[in-house]
Length: 326
Image (tube, rainbow, N blue to C red):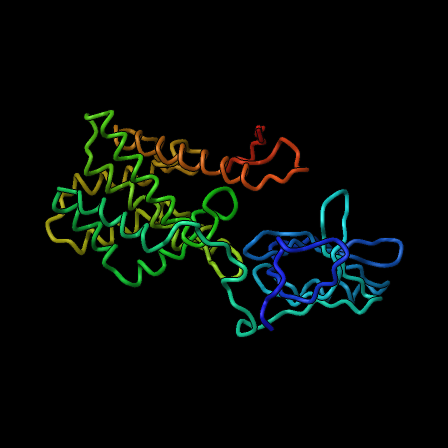
């Protein structure tokens, strides 16, 4: 069955029989007529709350709940209702509404994951043009060893930058990286003391570990490597391994790249293994932070509806910030 109805098309009172990806779920609770549970489901156009109203048999509802995993795609039959002014999908056991897990062959992943609005191949070409401006022989060779690697590029083009706060879509990592590199170039014009080759290089490579941080199917999920190691350490490992394949790469330069990668989050509580201790590390940290904060704010503002409150979460630290809709 081809997906025909998307979240952005939902209207109160409409009967629904379509596919949605499971984003999150809340365990069953008791209500006056039995047991119910809530989930968040969605597609490439947005997310919506789903409520399954079950009967008095707790074990039956618990069993259904446990069959549904975050990241899976489910067939949903139900009705669009409204609760506290927000649309939701309501499924009632008594009305024979259903939730059924689908096999991967039964849906198109592109229906459930949003993608960058910018052309991915054009962004990659632009990133390549910046890499071509690197004059240092070893740095240029290091960067191109990745950008000429078809397997790496395939993963890089598809990867998101984050799960929810900014650039959280297919092509998001590439988009974020290109914006970082553009700002690195401009910062070097203002601060000629900076080594431009190092700034452009680390602007390109510092988040490469994120291709191993997320698993992107019908949703974005953290991998075990992300939970146990984190993308900064993963990235530093990837870069060191690639450097070992480049004979004669200067050790002092290799140490600088490692330092900039491991310190680009700035503060220890934000995941930095080191605080920035050279000019280029300080510069990249602030470029990256500006990019994340501003892109997250812009995305949050674009997502505001007419009835939304003026306060909305836009920072990765979970800080609630006011947005003037204007």
